[in-house]
Length: 194
Picture 1 (tube, rainbow, N blue to C red):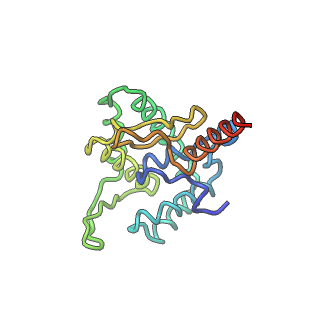
Picture 2 (picture 1 turned 90 degrees about the horizontal axis):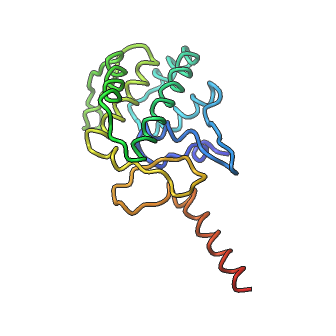
């Protein structure tokens, strides 16, 4: 499997893409971040969406990968639990917002102008920097009122989450679950015709 298709980057949001590193294949739940090298690979893949991440950042990550690995998994567990509750219709609790704000407090931001865009750049220990960026993304989803549009995939075997701003989207991705459902319906109709 290539780097570009191992991780289902279906949301364009760092926090949601982290949660979506757990998925279901052939009826079994799979964790795509089992090893430290998996976290490094995921960070390299999402680097394309975060052009301000440079080689210096990755050197720091590699130096502290054990701590980075544990922190990323802990944050993913909290985000998954909270995001699933939100997708099920629960409101966003103040404790969740405080939790995210506390992650940013450990690595507050300075700002850099990159490609005519003001980019937040956290400072601090590298694991806190990564958590701060992910927390900032989640808080941005709240600020822009996108988090209430969080949905579960209509495939009951899928655990991927996505933002449905149109109110009509059913699948995490047409490539992942939508086409499977279409093929299953087509095969069912074909067998009925025979």
